[in-house]
Length: 306
Ligand code: GUN
Image 1 (cartoon, rainbow, N blue to C red):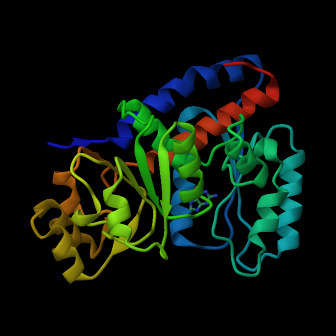
Image 2: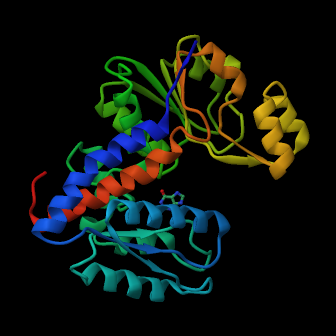
Image 3: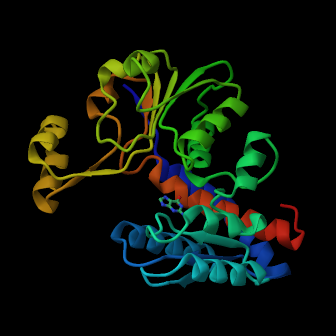
């Protein structure tokens, strides 16, 4: 039977380890401060931001939301970011992506003070990651590393295949695995013979954003499969094809009219050594690592060594 890699258990362990660090910051100086910028009304972004603010509340991190309207200009965003950069009580600045088309996303991310870049998207943070120097790591790939560490998945000398080359997940994921001494292959939409590349992997990380794309023929027996995808599927045929033999998931579909699935097809699970479920796998770790980065930022900025 495969091991189910439980993201909620790992998240809880991370959050528990942060509690005494937050308590010390509060006692000796002040609570860590996170500013979240959410532009317009993107429903998915609104849900993410709500979860991030809730996690702050539960941990005792001071959070504040900034809500520019959907027609905001790049200039106004830069003005807001610069104000937050100058605030001494703000340790982390998170600009929820995507931004509307009229806003130059790269310019805005570049404007964030790298010492407050808790998302780890600033080129300074990417450079630190590349050079294996201390710095903020993007939250989702950092969460995957915590998951692998928590479950004692051996990495040194193993072949890891990352499917997806985004700046937020694929590229930093590959770099983190490389620093853990994996042999790393990055695959993407133009990769030839993708299934064969993936079949060579001891560890597959799927971060492509296509529901149930990774099927059984992509995965060698006894591989560890990490699913970063979060996709909503509404077509009944597709849901039946994926979950026809799973009464709980079919009942959820009948109730909600859609199901959330990862990039990995459920048929893979019984043939691998371990896998992350969706939901409940990698998802909960992203916010836990944001909290971790925010606490670390406050400690760095206030000169406290954990
Ligand atoms: N949009 C989707 N994922 C993320 C994330 O991790 N951080 C930010 N800022 N925006 C996102």
